Length: 375
Image (cartoon, rainbow, N blue to C red; front, side):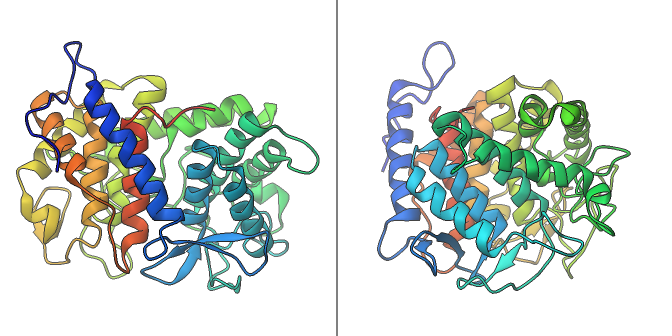
């Protein structure tokens, strides 16, 4: 248990030394829980000795979301052994080599590599590319490990699939520069919007595509501001190109699992490139909304307006952790401190739904501890 008497912040408004120490310790424990704990890990060696995969323990599959998350965790923690195993599995069993999805990755496969689906999910591709660029910076780019070249190839397909593959569709709408939910969709998912990644893509992608990624970054800043509710600060899982909530997959709720990532993404962008006032204001509103509604943290999902919905919260730790990550830029220091104390009390989730929660928990801790770095 953390001591409620210790100061969360220092006199200059930053995190106190004790807070940073406790967060760093929790990063190490969370990494162990994910990759090594004999009972609760969800990283496993793959079907070949040079492969490994991240198991979605709730759905019993390996997803590009989790594989690319694992690669980002590994490169941030300087674990090339894990990174290479995850990337080898991804290329061997998920990368499409023909058809309209050539160059993309099948978003869901079984642990033996058998495909559950053929289409891609853009959050996987964008995390793959960013993790590979960071690997290039940390470990180099050579013929045996062409990390940067592979990242550029992914982004080439994301922006130009319709030109590279007959019948293919790009993951980013070429007219408005917004990431699509899937290539065939004319709508989006606010949590897919990573303008901080796109700013780095605009420096590291193919030179001719760098203006595109800069435009995508600016478009996503505007989209995030539009999709966060003007009163509650909450963003929907799915939204049209104006940012208005949409309902799919028999879900009639709006602020649900994917959407929890929006506050974390905004906070990471602020850490790397400085806070956008309109986005910091949205995070402040979101922290206030959820702090005042314990029912939304444990029992019920909700509409972006804050109206409770009977669908239960599936990932309460992920919601807590990402909301606490917003403390980095919240304008309400009392609320920010409150959320940080909740996170310092929290431990990794156990059981069959631990995968998504613990991924968000790890990244939130990594960010707040100052260890989620541009490499």
